Length: 375
Image 1 (cartoon, rainbow, N blue to C red):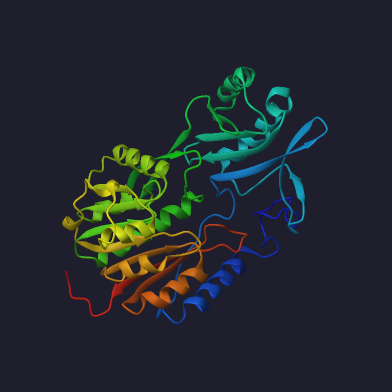
Image 2 (tube, rainbow, N blue to C red):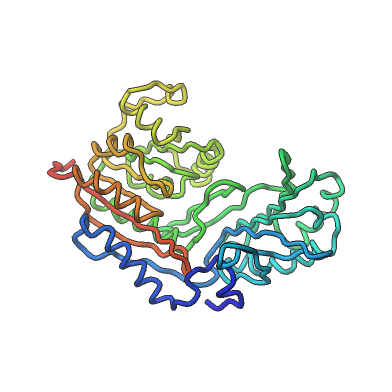
């Protein structure tokens, strides 16, 4: 990837290192952290180095009468103006300049605008959220409506305690995963995997692990909008998936309908609450309609935030035969494995380079209970 802002923009901290060296460094880092727990080399999944990111946020910098996109600088002590970002996928990239031109030609659009967020798909749908330090009124709507049509985008205006949808507040992603088409409604402010190409590879890796599992039901924590849940549901009898976000649970249920999946129950529970509910330490009205005892969990999938798993969740999943752990932080993964390998052994391991030119790396670990009998 080439970018005129390399060395100035803080978004790409590894700007001076070629992609091969970047990936080798990440592989060495994860291998060093996981060495006490793994016995084979890490499988490596990489994708394109440019136009890979389907979600992006840019500050808006005001200079006199003009607006520009801006990012934090490499020194983390200021801001730089940018006029390109080769990381974002083509559907965002080709609209950035036309959108900025329209903003600069309209006092209504640019006044007190401070952030623009993009959410896009591989099928050229783009949702643009324009965030303001002012209350939006009918004059903003009058200008925004033709802009949405002109740029072929879906447009949202936001200010404090205000949200205006010109049309929809979601985009529809279509991904071929394991030779099957999956459809995902992705909503504004809902979590989505930023790199569609690597996301597919992560899901397919998780699906591949199920070939080692004979039967049973799947438990999933941090399920989001059903990103892993829905493709994996084809390989289990039943699925119980939990997520703390109301919006994500609502999206996940919509995505089940879009994909005609009917063997998943989604419950709004945090990871800690899930542990309490399944261990019968606490009753939740949100779970009252579900017969938890009817599930025979052979497998659990966890995809926690950077902090990793809490100790109660670790204790809970230690009783499940197979564990698929997707991690966005190898340090917290290594910490959690110190506990998990007391009951389980690592069978397969992989890394996924979702964010080239940054230190970030995703990992996948598949564990099997020690001395487990066959299902």
